[in-house]
Image (cartoon, rainbow, N blue to C red; front, side, top):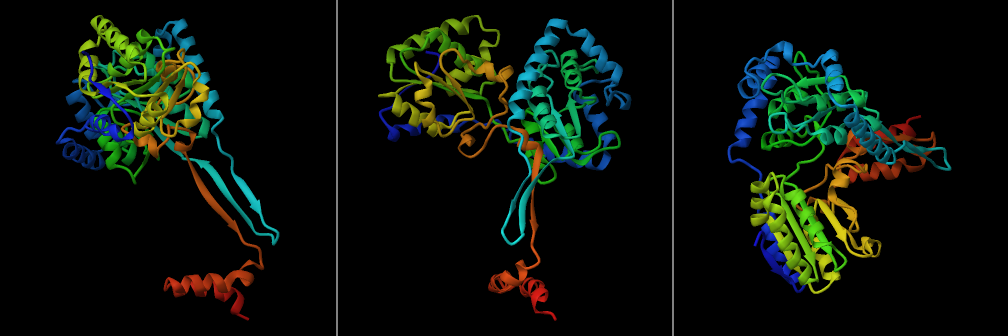
Length: 436
């Protein structure tokens, strides 16, 4: 059997599955200590530290001239990508941009009868950094990570967007990363990765000016660096291992369900893939399909480990209990593989993204449809949202008090201030209507 089976009668039985999923951890025991040393070193030595670390771990011949990618290199990367692939990247970018354009918030104003004006000013941050992982030594370019992180920043109106990605052994970046950046019009790209790239974006160096927000996935060192730098920079989120949960009825195709579970299981041995259904025969068939599909999957060792430790086929008494279980798990990706998903979507309370029906597999959202694929994991969909345009904006309150406002309300404001023992606050108001 490729993954554990659970029989769930009701909410009292949710605990075992939730404990299994909560047991995932992506942390190396010594990651924080190592990352703290890297952050301190980059803060003190800047480019010198970046060059030393990059030459040690990524490219032995790396030097200062390699840090920034030139305009000629970006153009060469674009030219090296086949026209058909460039067109696909451009179409995906257009879809992502259209979706995120609908998220853009506007400043607003609320006038009062006495002439007081209250409002909120929405502005983009000055600079954003997009981290793009190397991907198996640079041979599996994570194009989608660049698109999903950079485009919301562009829609937000961020004037400076920086891309960082670790170089390959020969010091180059994969041409597909450069092509995607070129298609987006991004010109500031650096060959630097891991925790030291995050440190450079946060603190700045002689070559890399600091940014305000950093977004993008990465390994435990990248994630730990982002977590430790919260407060110095804003970040998208602290992401854990990928996960998918599927709620299926008898209309679902078991072979498709198996394929969808494996689409997440192949990410990482700690990825989670759960299929929930009241149809036990469907789960039996899905189990058989998992075995068949695993056999010729290129990353079958990773997928098999994921399924063995964090996969699940869960039988429930009915779809209603299944939906309660999904909300309790609060998955990153939720596929609603039922005959009428629109009848159930109103019951979804906690999920990073919902994929509707049997013809909408998770990779549709990962790459092409438009919604962001940077999603809350490890149950944090209970209180977190997908990366969005809002990640790269800030909101400033505006108060324009009319001339008579303090006279009418000052005594009440002063009383509240004195209840908190803040006399200077009270006097700041009172001097405006007591002084003659």
